[in-house]
Image (tube, rainbow, N blue to C red; front, side):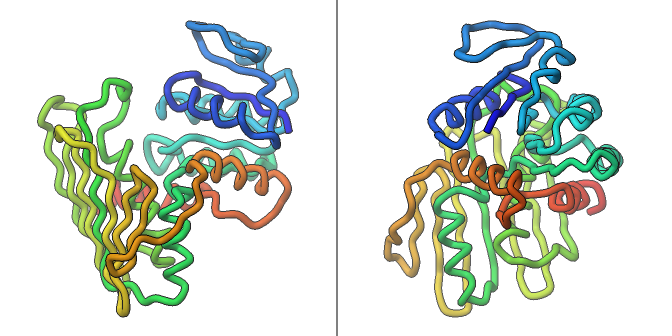
Length: 284
């Protein structure tokens, strides 16, 4: 299956590296505004010429503020597209992308790749026989240099809000967001979100001010306690280590994208899921 990638920053190169190892795909074309290294695929700095190469799937991995304008062109040429998270800057832009996709008959996936973390996939299966009481998510790191257009809520909290929906199967009915601007007056770098579902309560704590890297989920169920480490792909149930698959989240996401192209059921996030996440950030 021929895949084209738009945007060769950190995330675009992550996609390229994973796809290059996957026999289901062939990376056929690459696009960015500047070519700063050599690649083993035809490289374009002209988007129209890139889009003339007839890819089966296109991945948009550019900054969030460019997604809408790029999607307007891509949807005319390709009928299966993965757009990196966050899908867009606001609900209005997500609505516009949704309408464009419907008008052009395009299948759209959104890059919430944490859904495919082996710890999350196993936890999802475990929860089929468990009633959730509460979920706590922590995601800490040092301040990133690669992000320039969004703060920590749009860059990281969207992952974990999506995970809350994905794991619980419920929609958030109320939320409260606290945030501070420690290093940049335009971009928040610390946030705490508390959420209420119909039967579940949850808390998300995000930080770009930590000296330590932490990506952890603790979940209290009616019968069991789970602790997942998303960094080392581990999951404990009542203190006992569970055996997990060894695949990377991007491998799982790409195989779900493959299924989306074929019209098969999959766990890939869609535009509706992205809208529900953005709605929390804008309305609560």
